[in-house]
Structure formats: C-alpha cells, structure tokens
Image (cartoon, rainbow, N blue to C red):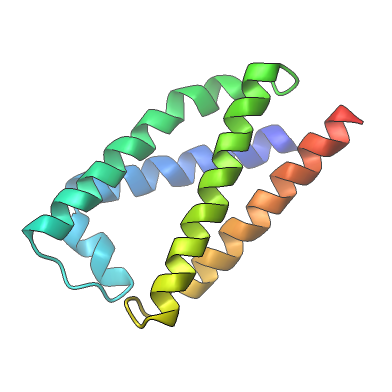
Length: 123
C-alpha cells in the first residue's frame, strides 16, 4: 500500500513541478497570489526542487525497507509537513486564500499515513 501512496505522491509532485516550471503565474493565482517576475522566479525554483525529489522517490518506492529509501521517505514527510506549515501560516496572514486549506489537510494526512506505514513496516 505504501508503494501506491508514494507513486501517487510522485505523480502529484511531477504535475506540480511542471506547473511551477512552465506556468508559475497560473499556479500562484490558484491560491490568490498575484504574480510578478520575482514570484515567477521563486515558483520556478520550487518547481526545479520538486523535480529533484522525483528520482529518489521513484527508486525508494521499490525498496521501502532499505535505510536509504526510509531516509528519502522521511525527507518527503518533512517536506509535506513543513510545506503545510508554511502554507497554513500564509493563510493565517491572509497571503493565500482558503483554497490552500484542502491541500494542507491532504498533505498532513499523507505525511501521517506514510509515517504510520514506515513504523508498521519496522515493527
């Protein structure tokens, strides 16, 4: 089951990365952020970072018990939690609109599910 969750997340990350790299203004406008050249630059940088996650996650999904795969998955969980925390803070400061709330909830849920499966596999 964890393999399918990680595969699903890889697909979401890939779609997000494409959006941030090639359509940064559109991606930012979804949550109510007005784009400018600096914001587009930062969004494209995020897209590049997301692309960099994909190869490690792709390999890790097939070797879930290895220490390296577990470290990659832990990095994914940290990204999901920290990204959600940053987004929630932006929401509380009225920097983004309420569309960000479902994304926050899904990422936190997926982070906890991955941790649960990682703990379950180890026990």
